[in-house]
Length: 398
Image (cartoon, rainbow, N blue to C red; front, side, top):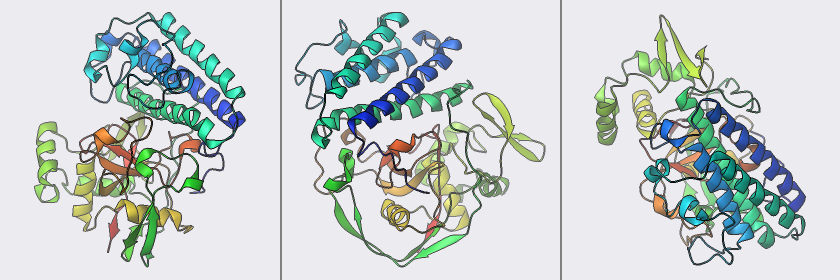
């Protein structure tokens, strides 16, 4: 993958303003898709761990930007905001640290018009303040943080549309490209520096502190595993053969009664799926997606390989090797999500720390990730049992 030149990590004030406008247009387009199906009313939305009421999400996105930019809070501690919220009871409604996930369905929320008006007012004030902000990293940090937050929320909302069988916005990038694998790539190993350096611009807290790691020689797939490759595992009874599944994976599988990946449906000799509510034949050479960690591990055990560590993945991505392709799906790694040595929580204190030791590291990006967010340094993370997102895998060996 060619790395994006318009990364938000080094963006100027003007570039950030343009990106914030694009992100908000996308958020509102997503919200409209939910609203068209009646899901803007929280009571109509299924209470699933991977879903969030979309109207609450819009209010939270606005609140987050107001908290760090307009209210100039240096951290997420409740006492840190310098000014009051523009919305009465806004902190009680939209502070994710104060409102448990399942409680978001039963809040006494303002109506949709009031939430949209609050979001619009915050957005206008943010852009006005940004126009008067110097283009230096320290001053632009809260704007970059708010942009990343909205972009990540947008990808989660898009995965929710897929889960509910609803159409995607017209602005969505045109799906995945076919991945013609060039086999595996052999790397000699050596020392690699993980983590973002000060001159890398904006960094998420889990990317710090930079530190050297020795990576032994390894081989890694040039591209993620495709639908056709994963289909061979399914056809060979991979979901029925417990020898390929970890103890945790077997326990998950027993609760699911699943014999193929999420959204796969057998149609004679073909596999079909639904993409945002539209039936489609599964494209053999597209990267397989909507897998959880247990499914990825089982495939690796079946084929006699393993998942790459995040150090191996980052080594390969930063190598500049022309055959190493990434960016179509997030990819599971073999690495539990843990803090780097010297970790210090960032302003958004709850972004990483609560997920350490439970979640697993994802690397790469998906077709739904805005290019400005894409970085080989980015450490995404997800609970092992979750597979609703745009996540696949590639395999590795010593």
